[in-house]
Length: 163
Image 1 (cartoon, helix red, strand yellow):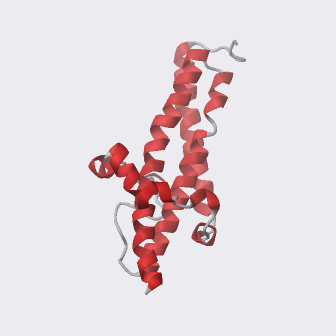
Image 2 (spheres, helix red, strand yellow; image 1 turned 135 degrees about the vertical axis):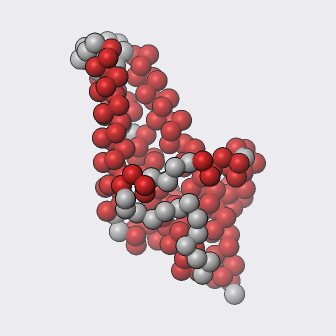
């Protein structure tokens, strides 16, 4: 399969950087505009499954606690949003909002993977696969951190609700 458009390599690199910047910022901006109430609901695709053991699976498999502090919070780029670098309080409402914002972040990063196949349009095939790999390597760790944090918060908030 040949690329649809042919550019010199230096232009391909510039186009790739600009395209990823556009996709990341656009998807983030759109997701920031979604109402919080949408993320407060328990949609199937955001539920923490029992096999995740309230997020402990992610710690066991990937040692999330060791490296999650090194991930840059996207709110510093758009100067908007809800920072997830730390809790904003320990009350039920604070934890519920934090958990909802982890859903927003997870959703944003799942959507950020979707444009990767478009890079085959102007990249050689090998570079298109590098773009797929980039999308996965950049986004999956952040998704894992969101599921880890939400699993832990969900376990705590379920104790509030049971009381």
